[in-house]
Image 1 (tube, rainbow, N blue to C red):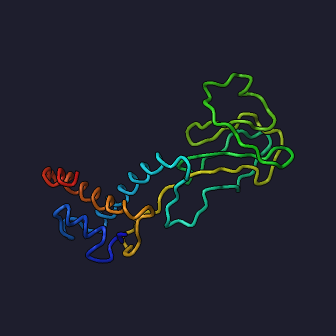
Image 2 (image 1 turned 135 degrees about the vertical axis):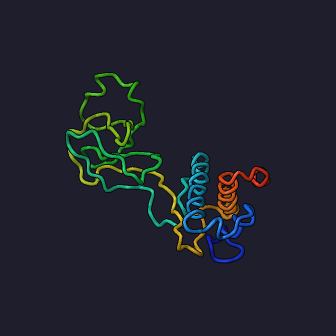
Image 3 (image 1 turned 90 degrees about the vertical axis):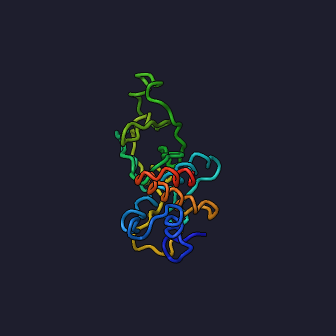
Length: 198
């Protein structure tokens, strides 16, 4: 397990080792912190491509991956996507009896004009830009009637962090320092060091 910047065994120290940099040429504020967070983004993107049966959540986060706070509003088929919903796995809505039903994910291009204009209990959804649209414009309202199962962005490092660790399996922690070191060597045209990191 590797801590952000707590000791000579930290991610920051490892990045300095691989890059050949010093704390003056590659300061933790802001350069290493920025590079480390970009590295975390790349690693999380790879994890989320491979987590079909188990939905990853950053171990530093206490947030749940289900948002059931949205209200279903009669006559409203368009809802704003939350910035925290990086990847949507499932959407359920309450029917007129108050029971949740799972919506099918569809492509808008595959829907007929009749389907796009129908009303009643939503049965499908599609995403466009920053909105999610229900197919079957609800003709009723339901409090807390929308449930979204999603995945969120990781918990990022801040400059003041010392003992914080990346929120994924420890055997991949070193990727943060290696990718950060590679940022430094590429930015400073240190091709030989970049090749060693690769």
